Length: 154
Picture 1 (tube, rainbow, N blue to C red):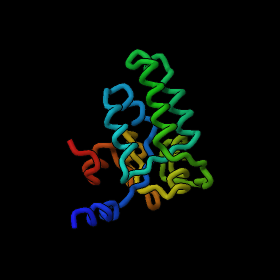
Picture 2: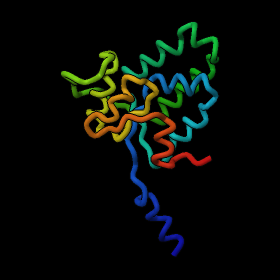
Picture 3: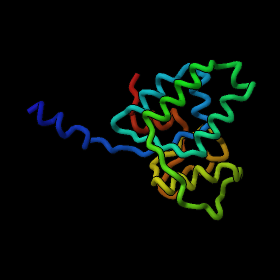
Picture 4: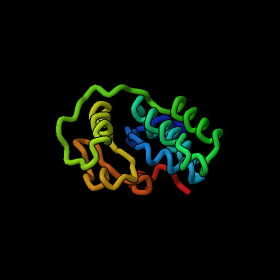
């Protein structure tokens, strides 16, 4: 009986589609929480989606002098490898014409969430968090997501 339950266990929990905002990738990179991010990206209950725009923004910020003094080249490379191996890559196909978003540079995240039909956008950006939702996607902090889904247990 136990073996049968194991076979159907993944169906007991929804597989979440999430987008991790660049500011969170950077925070986890410099804050010694890269192992938590690795657990999140490799969870059988989560698909982390990435697009070229997110990767480019991560690289642009990660290599800025003010960030480089808090991290190492090895950690940046580990994060890029994690993105390559553990994330689902997609291109943005939807466009956002108008939004309540105050920072127009983040419009691509909302368009990407529509494209992949994301369940969550994880961010620390107050301009995004104030929206709370965008179409089907809930906009939450990393900590809120962990509490809501109980994915990573300490």
